View 1 (cartoon, rainbow, N blue to C red):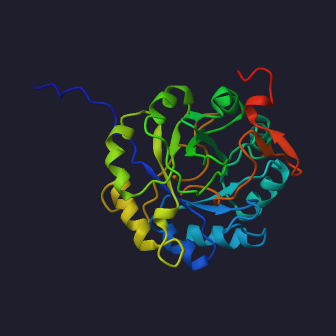
View 2 (cartoon, one colour):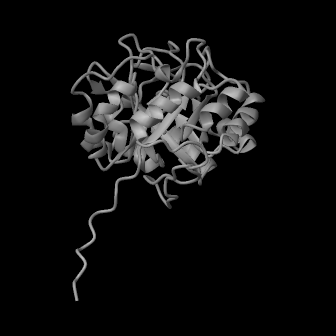
Length: 293
């Protein structure tokens, strides 16, 4: 009797496609059928696609109506109680902290929303990750995934279209310690990097904004479908959500199914100063604690 060959390693999960900045219900529903995650900006002061409290539940419902995607609350805020209130009202289970919130802000949000999936953006400036000394602290605070993005030379973060410098990502990957999404001005053409990225066990997908928009500035179902085919493989269409396994501790994505880029290219403070919860200047996380580890 022949012996079956030993089973190989399980196939790598399909990368997630996240697009960001929906402001209309019809827009959210259309792209929600072609992406895995759709970002809704909240608390992005001055952002072109920032939403008032009352609009978040409507947009979140529209995303889910697309049949595939989960809504993601993308924010510059530090206030865990306020974010938890809005997330519960909209039944949003993914939250992305996209500014320079310190690890303590992540911990407070994890306490307020123990079953949420928390994504923390980290920013590459001048070829280095400015939050690198705090990656371990963010993980211990309850972060599930990092999102690696590029900051502009002037300190702008989120949807700037600014690309990660060549060679900046590879040295950072061993330090992340958690699964990650990749942002930074990505397009369909960048999908040629997919196989190399997919070889890294922590790679979970991409976050695209500018390349997901049509000539009218709105998220385009046609453009998102093209990104989906380029980055995630054969056409999955609507109604086939890609899941991230619900976990039981930091470092594992929790609630819901499964990842544009986050908030608008709003000029906040220079990275050496991030706005505090009341709008007062707050030192960048690398100067907030004496011992980042």
